[in-house]
Length: 148
Figure 1 (tube, helix red, strand yellow):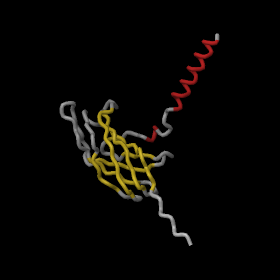
Figure 2 (cartoon, one colour):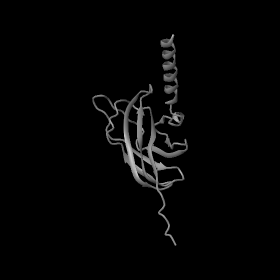
Figure 3 (cartoon, rainbow, N blue to C red):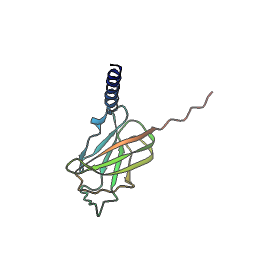
Figure 4 (cartoon, rainbow, N blue to C red):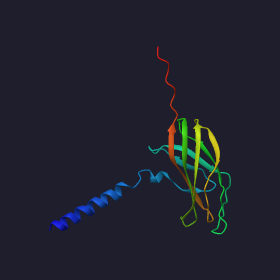
């Protein structure tokens, strides 16, 4: 009886733990076609960055992967950042991830854009959709005013 009770308790705790790990803002990490802007949200679910691709057709294969993709990332929030970084992910028509790269920038003002490549990317499919996710959004802090 004690063994059955312990087993039931472990299963119940495991189920709760697994459901607690589902990200609350996963609906915000929406995949979009290559010719549309992808949006990355901050931890509160507010749009922070918007990305557009310089090319709208990406065709890679296992034998000949695409290794350079350029994107323009724009700060759409009302906050200036000292540092931003994130991940760009590409998917084929079946929704299978087939390439992932990173982006980063220092000192990004409100409504400012930067063009970047995605180091380390190796796209091995004909890409249909993509998304961006912000991994670091470090706000720029104003300097302390002088004390009287």
